[in-house]
Image (cartoon, rainbow, N blue to C red; front, side, top):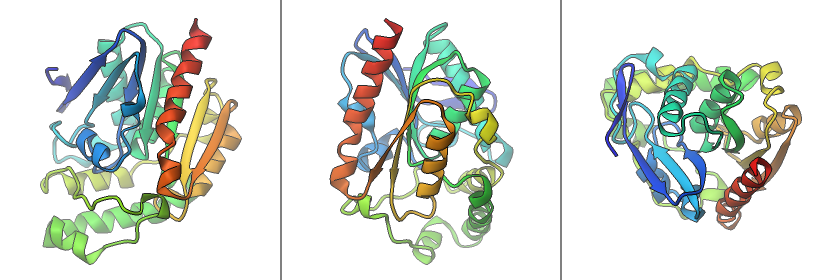
Length: 262
């Protein structure tokens, strides 16, 4: 598919058309369509009979972007998503799925345009509200460090223990250029999930998929979302085998959305 233009960037997209229900799949910060496949976070691989749209967020993967931090705040990413949906699925309700930054983007978009989504599958939601401040400081320090010593030296100096549910996954580098990564981190540092009262108005079925022992994606955020969303269910992964069930969760979510619409 040709790139899709948004203000300040072009988005690399791919579309699998099996003449079915429309689904859009997002990815997390510093990742991409390709990197999520390597990390087994490409839940769309388990779908059939759908019209599946996947894309790289601005500045990620094969998409372009500018070294401007405000381009990467989550409401701007939600604008990109809604523009893309208006282009690909005009007037249709869509099921949205994505991890971390992708989950945050979906929540902002669902509040902006509540009639656009039939349901959401939110994977490993990030730090939010009171827990966001410390994560924002981490992102700002990372941006400064990358500019001073480079990406590879930064990754070596700041290695972390992966959560148990990702044990055995290959090591990957950020799928972002060295020029843009500091701006992405600074944009993330300026971002937060929507207000709790606004999230409580999202009146569609939501599955929240979380895992344990990951400070950047704490279980507390997932539990809070399930408490405030009117139609939400929580699934917690503790092992890679648990994560391997997530594509079926998405397939079930899409089937449910299709049956409700029908």
